[in-house]
Length: 477
Image 1: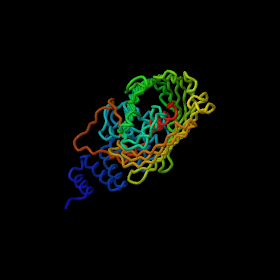
Image 2: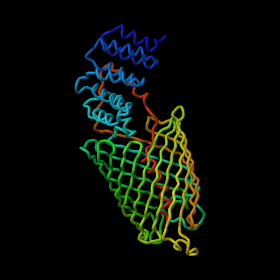
Image 3: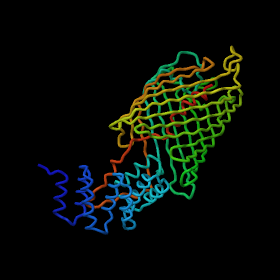
Image 4: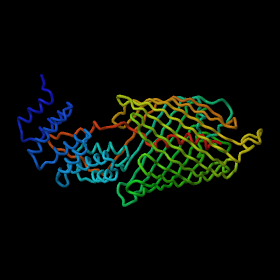
């Protein structure tokens, strides 16, 4: 009958009491069994046996952090003298980073996180932990970040939310639907007060039904910029170039057609991690030149957690000065998302979007039979989603039901839509500047993995996902 892990590790220590690997295996076995007290006792014995080895001291500090004993962890880390250039130095910085976060000292946390990134050596699990934590984007932002969203399902109205003219004749087309979004960012890791970045993004929607195919579209964007400031508040100044491709034809040419393009200057200001202020201004040019416009928009958003509930919210406003006066627009949008974390890392999410747009100079233009009617659109969208436990701490799968309805003073611009979508979302990050991991014979890894958390969307993710909702209210004319 095989020995249990604790008994087996004890036997290894008795066979070779000078081998530190045996003590680490025994401490790990106690930790796996939930016996922190004996794990600490084992590590103290090893520290006394090898006073020049800081690794058992770092393990003890990690246990104290896990227990929430911050003063004891601080005392242990202060006594940890690790050889310069060793992987243990990087681990000490990671533990100090975690201690600073738990002590509500974000400035110190950023300093220790940066020091861990610049280390010359890392243990394998420490490297994996840094990459995992960097996905959250708080104190450690990786140079390369990305997110891929894929959705497949059915829509009651392929015309809803399309940049094509909703006044086309015929019934609303039902269709199988596929949507995708890809966002990539490179942020240079080093820089004195300023760090350049480059974002690439693609969003698309495709419809299988013959009558819905013309409403398929693709949006491509490029956003170079620079982040100013090492600590919060931080400021992003950026240029965005954007192009919109439609599958359908218009009165001039057969599709697909480049329907619109934009050149904008944008900013994001983050006074703290739970709040982002954003804005932008520029020109958007359409194939129909009268619709081309100068646009100005801005807003703020944030998020916070209450027990098992994670809330994200945003409010924004926009002003469009079109070349043709009837397309002038004043509008506002509010977004709210609430996610409930369930046992086993399952999750439920509810979302809502409310958007109001006024066309103050449109009387008689959109409906010749009503010369005094100004166009005003009210859009409401509600969604409910269920998500399975994440795979590899990076991939989420789920199913969503969405209901959208737009009520307009011009009847041709009303629409309703029901959608059922199966979703897959993959968030990833890369840090090519991190040193390679190193190990030695008999190495016992520190179990960082049990500190893993639920994958969380940021307010920027919510805003990107709902740009289509804003477009359906503000750009369809």
